[in-house]
Image (cartoon, rainbow, N blue to C red; front, side, top):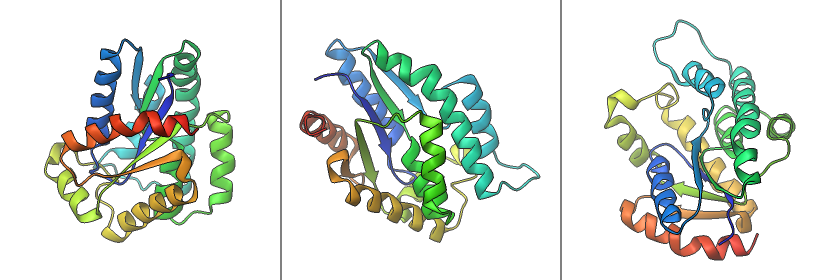
Length: 210
């Protein structure tokens, strides 16, 4: 396979971090260079922004518009500092979340207008879009139960109400339905081994359609 930019998306508790690591291990075993990264984060600047966006116990409220702009700032740094250089040297880039999470969380979840969100993402990403998005879909109740099973990992977004998370999941599914050639939707209720095997099986076919 030709190295590609692959993004793992989906609602909370779908196992994105686990599957990024598993796919990276398989690709490295084939001799590829692989960069594993995440959003928000991936750089020192991005990690500082992540702490603001996801931290608990702060005495301030973050507006949806502020979320968008902070995420875009982290993404701009990430694209230019990490993703583009890796792609330029022909490495695989596996990213835990990217621009579609903004459309799902701040668009679908928070109810912001998608038109300005798209303009902001175009600027932040310098027009760089993934070769493939893997949507690890899981019902909200199951995903949140997984997330809350480890209290130390719970963040500000995890604590949003159930209706917010339902809107996020619906937005992801709508994005995938609107562009099926660019998405692979996976039932993440399955055992992690089964999800891993399905991704590995389907990856060459999906990338060949890009």
